[in-house]
Image (cartoon, rainbow, N blue to C red; front, side):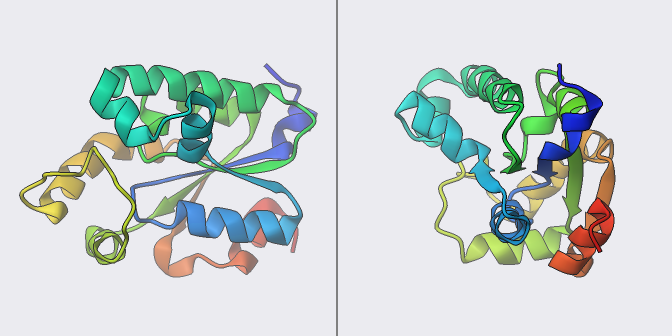
Length: 175
């Protein structure tokens, strides 16, 4: 889709809900003087409706189709230097992981379930795919096992305990 020279213009952060993609994405974008895009917020803005409404109204398949379309739109803007915080499921659908890897640098923010539960318990973000779970830890574990093979295809894996701007800089070669 884009030349190899533009690949570094886009950094995609992937990982489970609660791993810190949006938090670290914003910090990284500020540090690197890039635009920050939270993919879920971008989809909601472009559709004029909250992600949870898209999922509850049309189902996850409809949301994933829109997510893929807007991911391609972001990638298609070749001159833009961005850090994109992807939704937790983004890499697992519509061949998105391949699309991101071909057109940017993909970093998986790897986190254990206990840390995810801790982070999500204090978060007021509505997460429709986790809502109503009998056990948040159990739902996260089940979801993680499905998504792990996609996450591990990232160019780089950054364990939660090691996440820092300095480690991002080292990964990206901007020490």
